[in-house]
Length: 68
View 1 (cartoon, helix red, strand yellow):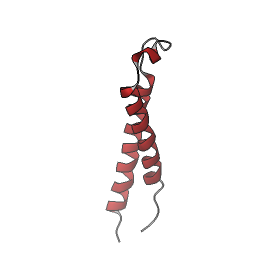
View 2 (cartoon, one colour):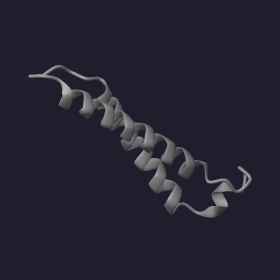
View 3 (tube, rainbow, N blue to C red):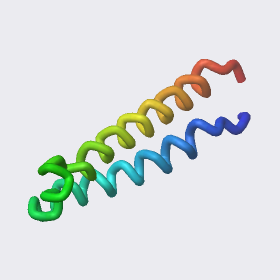
């Protein structure tokens, strides 16, 4: 079994994305008045979570298809 860097990178981005997403969902709407009412934490949390999930998927798929 070889080391695939996409798996730890995917875990890191997924964790940070989940934290930002949850903070964006649970925070007060008054916080986003300065950013024209756009929930930046929610948007970037979704982006980071999607990127991390895709990195994990590519990493697991590459390890699954590798002959032993």
